Image (cartoon, rainbow, N blue to C red; front, side, top):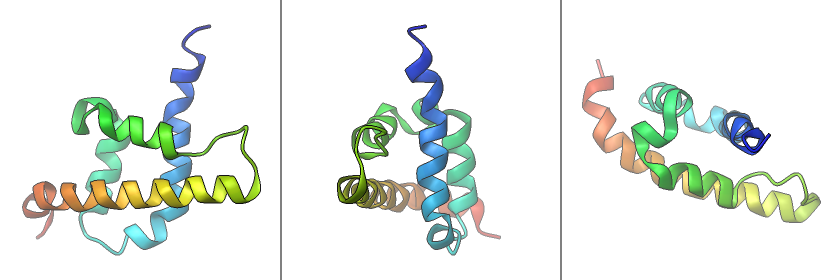
Length: 95
């Protein structure tokens, strides 16, 4: 039972990434980043990525404007992380 919150984490990640996928998919490195995050965020990119999503992500107990603000903060954090990852993933992704 204690793992219920942990089990929902990938769903939160998917919801956040899917919301901003149209903007991010313009970047050639996005799919590699997306796949790596889906496979294992903590293992591939470090615990701070998951902490950022959980801290700034979607909260079922928050509605309306507050949730929009949380999503905006999540987007900013994901874009910051993505910029850092683009540097490390870029050479391997570009053809």
